[in-house]
Image (cartoon, rainbow, N blue to C red; front, side):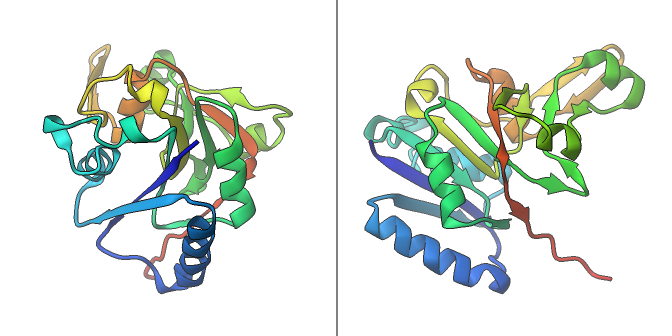
Amino acid sequence: MKTVILIPTFVSVSAKLMQQWFQFAGWCGVNNVEILSVANRTHNDARNYLITNGGGFEDPRRLIDRCYQIVFIDSDQVFSLDQIKMLIEHNGDFVSGWYVKDDTPMIARWDEEKFLKSGHMDFLSKEEIENASDDFEVDYCGFGFTKIKTSVLRQMSYPYFTNKLVTIGDKSENVSEDASFCLDCPVKPVIIPKLRIGHLKEVVI
């Protein structure tokens, strides 16, 4: 059951996480887990490049036809080897750990009424996730620590990651590439409540 790890790095990887990545690369080598990475590409471009192993529209199944599942890990995520093993070994088709950005978990329900009132979707609270006793479905999640089986990807069309333009009432918004993927995907992502990872965001104070 071949697993391939995809890591978009954009322009840098923090020195604070180098030891984590060294340990992770060693673990992948011992466990026959392949790592692919790409730099200097924006979000949806990087994810499309990685998920096709550079095949793009000419060969969109170059990668997914030779592996069982794909794991996305963003280069600013903080995690342990036990956490990556939990994600890889989970039997779900489309599963994710969770993390926060600006103190908000990157997990949401598609609630158009709430969007019309507030201008944003129904993001779950940290307390709601932490109090969940079982894994649960959501409408979309961030792709920073996410696994999807290639049997699901084979039901989808390239480009797998887009920036959908969504119109709700009189409001139109471009949707992020990970949310767009979730909206197009034939199965919903499942969140693993006990799989919370860190999210490194270095700021100027």
